[in-house]
Image 1 (cartoon, helix red, strand yellow):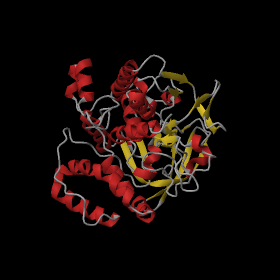
Image 2: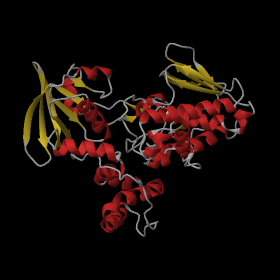
Image 3: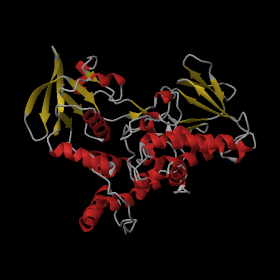
Image 4: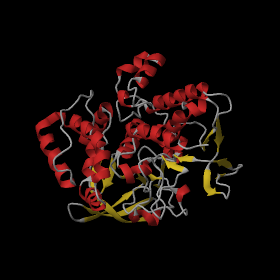
Length: 432
């Protein structure tokens, strides 16, 4: 996916690679490099949620992506929010350029799925590849991104039903009839993508949505601008940060999105300064509201979404499913509303859009420290996973949303691209 591609580019552009001193092997189970979950879509109206001038592979060259767009199709430059499939093409193009800058034989791709790794007595690392020969290396970057969403507890009884879709991007979902009733579980970015895709395919019925707080994403303004925010705040506890942001939002009025964009650059610094108890306080009381205001959709996507909501084609309920049973030709769910009261309703299909989680399967059973917040895995600032004794693992670097444990903000390109540079430097440091 994107994380692995970003890391490969940084390694290929290093002096060690250009001198032919190292070999870089990229293991990828999909046919196309750089797409992953985020950019694997071929749907033209699946749009990036970040403006093009913040999506460069190189944080030190913010205009790199816009220049690539101008060179490949200047007409597309007019839209600040680009199609995701175009960004996948950009990543592939940058990787191709980086490969050409290195000598032949420095870079290779293994098409396969990494299943586990073992540290050998000679210090090497052996990575088992499903159905293929293992890969041996001195160091590796774990950039496995996301795994599919987990099944909510209230839906466990129908998880094997053909009418329940655990993965909203499974191709089987195309078989949903235009007149079938659908319940979407989760109201975040994935839900917006799925529902707009169904509506554009001509879905006739309204679509119900249920999530614990009933908070769908908000929209970006068309153009970004700087917001005059003075940091650090006097009080950077969770309570103090929320108070400051509320006061500034009240003053900002319609400019509140620019305030949030400006504050994003402070989040990693503040998160790393918080104690475990402060982080838990944030996750318990603030996260849902932060996510709604922080993870916004492109203006044109929000306009279409808002029309469906206002017109009653999308109906959102704040609540939770407490049970579900397959009932003949449908699924009967039992739910509790956040406002109080219980209700039952039958649906032809239930689609799980609760959001993906970090894929840490390769790190299981290696004795690394556990994350008490269940966000990812504890690491140092370079991304080295922390062993049970508190020391960092020098030969492995994590570059994925699993770094939320350490940084909180580590899911979007503006965060991952900077960390990719750090990861490459950590991998190259001290190599023989």
